[in-house]
Amino acid sequence: MKKLLIIIFFSFTFTNSGFTQQYIFTNYSINEGLSQSVVNCIFQDSKGYIWIGTQNGLNRFNGETFDVYSYNPADTSSISNNWIYTIAEDTNGNLW
Image 1 (tube, rainbow, N blue to C red):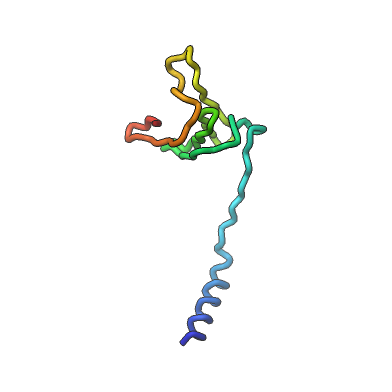
Image 2: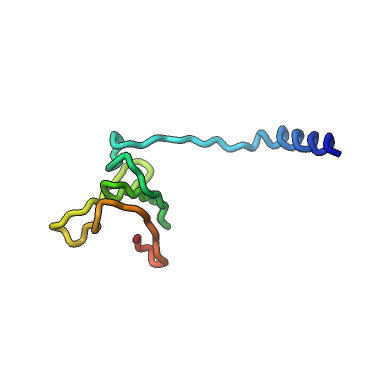
């Protein structure tokens, strides 16, 4: 019985090997526009943007470039702190 299961497993593995998916990993750093190299959290919103929380601001990645949002005490509409620990989205699409 064990031999039969092993044969079925190998035969399934070889027959489905043509359906494997290739993944490409790209490293991003401050050289590509990330505000800092220490990443605390990553979140993908409902629009597809990738949000990255660091110790030096909130970064939005659109697949090509980064937009950095930082705390500015003179701007009441800026984020409240540069240390971002977690990111969430509510049902209205607002980020928290």
